[in-house]
Image 1 (spheres, protein in one colour):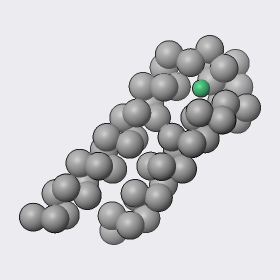
Image 2: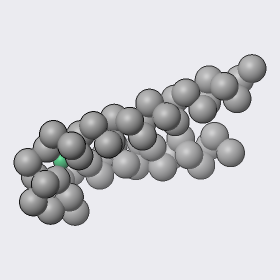
Image 3: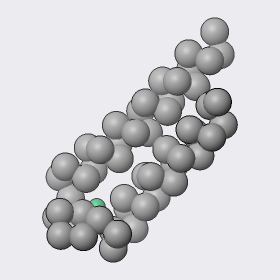
Image 4: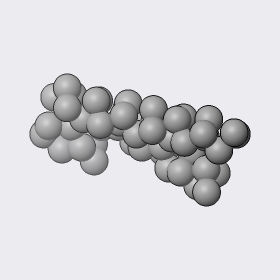
Length: 52
Ligand SMILES: [Zn+2]
């Protein structure tokens, strides 16, 4: 089903964000200053909205 593909894409985007936060020295200091984390989160948020 198409919904399963959307779910997997959302989970993948979320995992990428979590993985980044766990290995990024900028995020460890202050995640709000990390543009990479912001990009990853926006990617996840966009999928989360369209995946509903
Ligand atoms: Zn980061």
